[in-house]
Image (cartoon, rainbow, N blue to C red):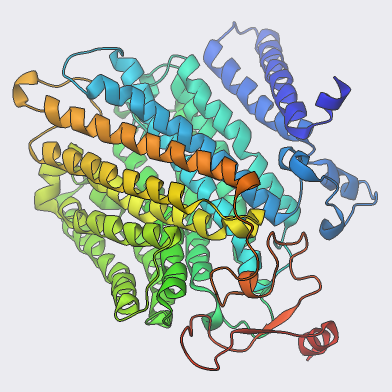
Length: 621
């Protein structure tokens, strides 16, 4: 028992249960002292809040900060790697690579949970009539599917960013290692609280949680709000850390226009997440207060305005789309030159296009509200700003095509997923303008056409690129390659299945199928298409299962990765062994002397090793 108690995550979960009980007792006692009776909803919310804080206390997230505040000795981050083996992945550790893997595992767990929820309601939709779910259950699963996968994407982005950014820029760790670990671990109680919404009556709002329905719905919506609120803290703090790391911890000679392009994408993403995430936290917090304290922010009869919620919500949630996809687009630009053996075409334009997308993404939220009753004079400006986003996005597409042109392409699994990402994301881009143009959006907005478009954008902008990244960098993490045959089965099963699913969604959407509904008229002729969509969804799940088998099997039986297996110019492949050592470049400092993507150019060099004394003199000068 003592050995189990010593494991950080176990201790944290026990503390979370204990803290939830403490919160319930504390709040009940306060209400009793004030002469108020028992009230379930605020009591459970306070209990959930206490539980999350106690989880972090039990885990040890605050231990070093408390010691420093008391004037006690605290180990430096590079000396604090006290856990070895698999144990370190269950503890509050400071190594950015371990934290990146922790994020990645959490992302895959949430991907599995969110995908499984989708399979359940897809079975319901495979034919008309209610089969296995009632309306509240269906809406709860749809809402959790959306938000769980959003958090899965955010944690997946954090996995890539945390593991790779220090390696790509020559840093030994993140700028704030303890804050980095805290940013991950707060996502654990956030995910548990979010999923607990199923056991507190569910909710009927979908993932957007619009009032007035969210004000009047079951108590599960409060757990939904609380879980997303904590997940937002993870995103905000992680973004602050990444921005600081990229701007302040680059190797000598690594000027901004010598940065790997993935670093530019992560920088733009982090700026958006840092500045916009507060808005979704605020919008959800206000609905929580309206339910708990009777404040009428969004109830018209009390002077509130439900459209205000949509402004706050979408001011984050449309930039969030680019938060999801910009790192994926960066992965595409990072991998293409490696497998085409050509320089990345228009490097500076591609770098600046990430910042341009980040900027313009804050000007387009209103296109989600064309059908919500916003003033007509706002529709046209938002339409134009929405279409404007296509310009910097188009820069990336032209760069990819020009990079591919007359290249000496190789097609291992990472390249297959990179090409699949380009094709699928192109479909998402081409189906976007009808959703951003007033005249067509008024007809398409709440149909399955939007569902198909959104899945194209997310799979092309995140899912395909993240699989490409895992197949590409897995050897750097484990020292072994993923199995190519299983990888190709994964790709060739998932790609046509996904196209079947999204083409079916867009087809019935054009014919009038509404989204977020549990049943539909059998006379409309949608049954066969819905069945095909469901089959496509299950085939995607099987392909991901093949990937998981490959992931686990290759960790012990995969081919050993020796040296620079991809013949890459980036420092993590050209300078470090696989797997990467704990403190990265502690004894292998380097200077950047060229451009990162000059593949195929005779005599070009990106990095060179230098001695510690030379670094010291260069920094001082």
